[in-house]
Each structure stands twice: as C-alpha cells, then as structure tokens.
Image 1 (cartoon, one colour):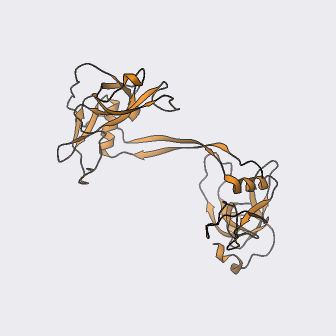
Image 2: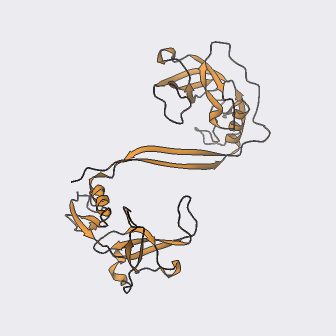
Image 3: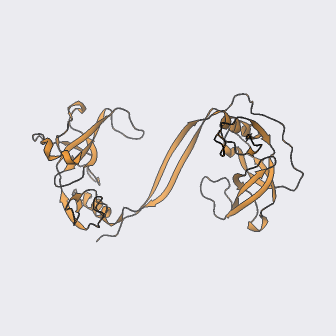
Length: 313
C-alpha cells in the first residue's frame, strides 16, 4: 500500500458584506478614533454594538460613545503570532471592558511578556496610523496608568459613513485524503478509475471514502470501473470563474462510470453545450502529465436507456 498522501491546502476568498446602521456607525467611528457602543432598554452599553438586544431581541439603535481606555477582564498569551494577526511579535489576546461599557471587546494587547499582563490591568487603545473603517483601525491595546479618558459624546453621526466592507478570509491547513482516496488518486495517475465495493450491499463507490455511505461498514475491496460512463444529470455554466481558463457556456455533469453505483462530476467537452443530454455516453480525455481527466467527450454510442441509470440521479 502506498504511503497515504498529504499536502498543504489553502482556502481563500474575499467576503463582501453590507453594513446596517449600527455597524456602519461603529466602523466609521473607528476611522475617526471614536468607539461607539449601543445602549439597551435596561441601560447596559454593549461594545462592540449589536443591532438587537441579546436578552429581549428588540431592535436597538441608541448609539453612545465610550472611552478608549479600559480594564482587562481576561487574557491569553500568544507566543507565536500567525500571518495576518494584529502584531508580528508575541502579544496577549485580551478582553477589555472599555470605560463606559458593560461588555468586553476582544483585541491584541501589546506587552513585553506574559508576566506584564494581569486581569484588572489598565489599558488604552493604540490607533492605527492609517484608518479605513475596520476593526484593524484599533492597532492594539497598550498598558496605561493615566487617568481614564472621557468620551466626547458622539452619537454615530459622521460624514461619508462606511456602508460596506470586504473581509479577506483564508484557511491554511494540511489535507490528507486517507487510505481509500490515496489509492484512488494513485490509480488516476495511471489513467485508471478505482472505487471500493461495500461487503454488505455490494455497491461500488467512486471516489471511495473507506466506508459505505449506505451501510456504514468499512470498505477495502478495490474495483476498477469505467473508463466510459453515462451522463445522469447536468447543468450549463454561464458565468466564468476567476482563474479558470474555460470559455462559457460549458457543461458540468454527473457521470455514472460503468460498474459504479455513484455518479461523479466532471466537465463535458467535444460537443455543443446545448446538445448534452441525460443518457449521453461519454469517455475521459486526458492531457499529458495530468493526474485526472481534463473532461469527458461523447463516445458515439447510442444513449443509455433511462432505466439503466435512474437509480443514480
């Protein structure tokens, strides 16, 4: 058995969202070096502000300014900051209750070491040099032993308010496909499609997962399927994906390979998009050095009878 594969994988995308009046005022305030909270009906001031009371679920819009100084309520030391975190050197993650607030704000606390941090210590905001209307306008908190700052009484009215933000999400991790899919990937490198048969229901699944999704029992018997198959369902793609060198429109289909009891998905080529149909018989097209088929094309065989693939829809 070949060694189980593993490889680094990055999932990254920009997330665009619009802001309601409360979050718009909060982020615009940060741009102007003002921290706003929202006051609930029972008199509590919540920072960061929310649009609905977490206790009564009532909508709340009463914005009030709080001070940029506050008290650490709890903290955890971060000895090895990761890419994209607020500070490049070791720091503490801290919950800070700003003066005038009844809840705590989570952010980085710049301190020389964990011995310099304690619950109850006084801190203040260190503002970023360039501010754009984001939580990163607060560069971090820093120790402070002066008198508490007094809020200026701002209530959320600003010129040129921030109405939307783009948050760049990224997840770095190491992915391992496991024993079953490692064998499947190795077979693909030899232009073969290999699934696994369930010892109970005798169905053949591809790509294999190492267990039968119907019976829940482990699978180990390898079965070569295809290479030809039948289009069971399909969709026509009319929007061009970024960094994908395929002209639209094109067809993406579920294909039941001969001998398999589960359809896999792939692109259909070699035929006008409006001639693709259920029951179309197809075969893989490989490009030199590729580890998987580039697309599937018609074989020229008569279409498969509906009864032969209806259970795989």
